[in-house]
Amino acid sequence: MASRRRVSIGGATPTLDTLDRPLRDLRLSVIDQCNFRCTYCMPRDSFGADYPFLASSERLSFEQILKLARAFALLGVEKIRITGGEPLLRRGLESLIEQLAKLTTTSGKPMALALTTNGSLLAAKARSLRDAGLGRVTVSLDAVDDAVFRRMSDVDMPVSRILDGIETARAVGLEPVKVNAVIERGANDSQILPLVRLFKGTGVAVRFIEYMDVGGAGGWSNTKVITARETRDIVESVFPLIPIVVREQTGTAVNYRHADGAGEVGFIASVSQPFCGTCSRARVSADGQLYSCLFATHGTDLRPWLTDTASVEQLAMAVRSRWIRRDDRYSELRSTQHRLESGKVYPTVRMSLVGG
Ligand code: SAM
Ligand code: SF4
Ligand code: SF4
Image (cartoon, rainbow, N blue to C red; front, side, top):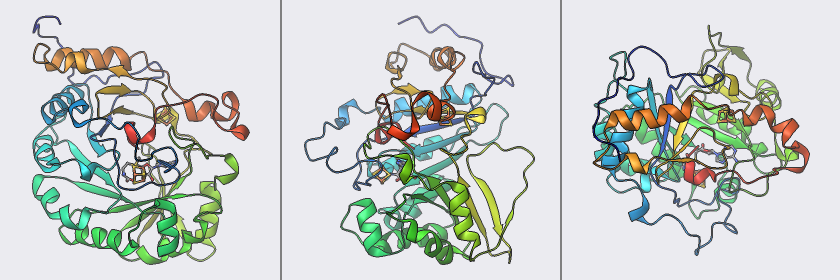
């Protein structure tokens, strides 16, 4: 590894890829294991008891993750989302969050810190996560009905446990809590209206995500995708919605307000209306691989720069040199290059390793 030479980097200049997309968001996967076996992400027949998950010694340490976060902050990242696998299974996560919460962006603002979780451990951890400095939490929940929930997540747990987690998160001030629901035709489309009904007027925004052909889940087919448009029609058949006008669409969801003012509902059209054109997200897996797209086939190993011999600036240069070559736009190409009808034609990184 090279010496600890200082490299001039960062400042106000954004780090742009070949399609002029700035590096703004970092998704950090802290563990590839999960206590759920959602059929669309980690189906039990592929992720059984003998699945070779990363050993704890293969996962990045908190010091390494912090160094990574500092390097991404130098490159213009303004928001870090902690994910997995199930991030709350990572022991001592609060101490990492405490350190990440102290970071500032290149414009001097505090780094926005969010976490995505299946909610099963949230009731127990919400307070300590808040105390550590976590800003926001997104809870994945695909059903209100107990039987449908158990079928989707393939776990022996009542849905009330997730609802308790959401309630506790709100009570301790981890707001606004968002709920993400993946909708799969024939599996949980019956839950669209119950989810909206349950959270209407509570301050919790529900966002519906189109079922994607992510790595690791084999059963995807476009016939199982309910488009955001279809989902919105179902919602609007009962709950009138008004679009929320934004000057510039940078997030993934298109958001609507209940006509009576009782909260928001969002729709994430990752398959039917991809948003690759504004995709500013980098992902780092729990073992230190940088992925420039959720559907990448392979990553860039950052571990050589995560040793004591390399500086944060050198690590940032390694990330930058990958980002400026980035040309990913898988979802935009999916329907042409990858033949939507017959599913995927090559394996992409598994969702549980790289994070959602
Ligand atoms: N375990 C945590 C959770 O479920 O929130 C964090 C990791 S999970 C991989 C992150 C997000 O990816 C979840 O909201 C999940 O619903 C979403 N996801 C997983 N597989 C998906 C798929 N096939 N299509 C769309 N979203 C998916
Ligand atoms: Fe686990 Fe989240 Fe994947 Fe479900 S979506 S299996 S909770 S990582
Ligand atoms: Fe971003 Fe890749 Fe998803 Fe397109 S397909 S939005 S480039 S992660």
